[in-house]
Length: 377
Image 1: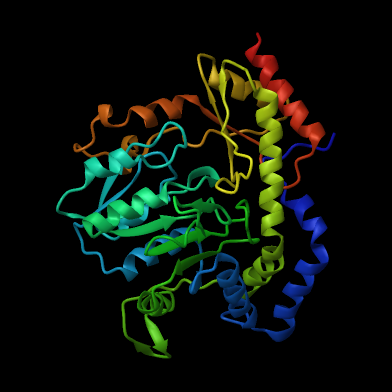
Image 2: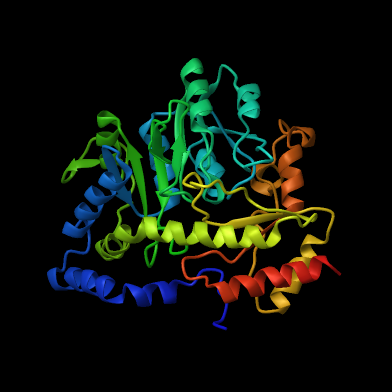
């Protein structure tokens, strides 16, 4: 059996090696390393894939989220609601901009931000909501947009983990995650569903005026060289990373389908196991692109299971072991433990198994057999 990886980028690369190498060689041959033709080509291709008017590439996913907020002219002290159960980058950029983070609990079923918790957290100071499409599953954007419209709030989608996922609305229409709010952001970190070979990110919006402002922000506030019209940052996607992404974008649907198929095989193996709650997978399954395949371990030793898997050479991870409201940097007397029952439960239960485009049946069987072996002890 081939060695199991949490993310097998090498095997993925081998299948598209010629395309990737020729794209990188084009950059080397033309010496257009910053804002070169392949950056603009990738931008246009991603706009077409997402069916969004504007894609603004930038240096990484955290920058993308920060710049999206900068473009909205939020003021110090403005409250921004986001999920407690996610990676720190989401709350980090809120704090860096001297906005006031308002962490709320998540939904036990999908682990995304709780709609009821959003409603309860809104105050006269609330200016924005940041839903995170966690682990690749689209959040309930229809409900979130309705709340935002009713309360005159911005919605900034953190789509770092769910590029390619669809959000389905009650009228039957679908839109890509990241393109529904006023502005969205994503990361092209190598392990993402669409990853480059370094750092990269992008911002999405259908708002022409906002897109224009963001294009200036990512480039030192310049629209014309040495004319600084807004306060900006230096956050550009370099041409080599754009070359990689441009080579991989045509395979994104195929990559997501491979992840979904692996998830189905995982869940089929765990069906009926009383100590496991596996992620739900519908027949169409286009609302979840499985950046992570995350189990909940119930009435069993989650940490013991993790060690058991590691001892067998099976990589696994706990995303995320400490709630944001308990992190030293974000502790605040406003937060009460009773406000986060689901998050506090999830951090004790979750474990993520290997998930990537190259998982084969032999590997999946070994992983699932190993999980079940431990739980039957």
